[in-house]
Length: 289
Image (cartoon, rainbow, N blue to C red; front, side, top):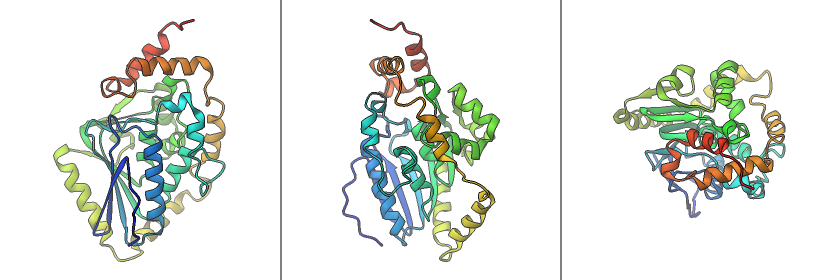
């Protein structure tokens, strides 16, 4: 196993019997910010070269928020996001796409264990995993970026299309609504919703069974499954990046809307419960001169 002396500030990492559990722990709402992005990239770099890790489980320390979304600060300070560009990543992609793709392309089997709210960048990170299991009636997913004046640009349009299909992806992206586990399971956004008290045991058992497979079996199986998509660039993230550049960095009126959102409680635990409503009210508010 590769030794790791790195000090994580926004994640907890535990490796046991070939299963690495990554726990997002970035109060108050597990925002995907600089600290999370740097910690995740470090872990990905470790996992890429650590043959002792067979399965990766991504979870949250906060039962209310798996991962709220990407840091709203990046609407006001795009250069901070740009500074996270990965020198080893695809240069045609933005930093969030680079991060999610490196996670998605890890040689290990990856599982996202979901509780609480996950929106925007938080959903995109979960979709970069191979599988997603959620606590029924305690998990909500959403891509509210259009309510912010942009659209999903961290892989969301491509990952959604693979899981949901075109029509449902357009619905999710353009409505900006929050979806509960019943509909998310029906749409294929998650593998399965299960009673909250059964989620941990199920994911733990699945992860350990996969980790115990003979060397190479899981990787070869996933390679064969992925071959079904090998006819084209899936996901086509460069096209998403090109399109996203048309709306981000955002124009002043959209930045002002997001400042109103933050002023009214965005990125706080109370404000994030009904983020969609908060965004709608910020959009409807008259601009101050």
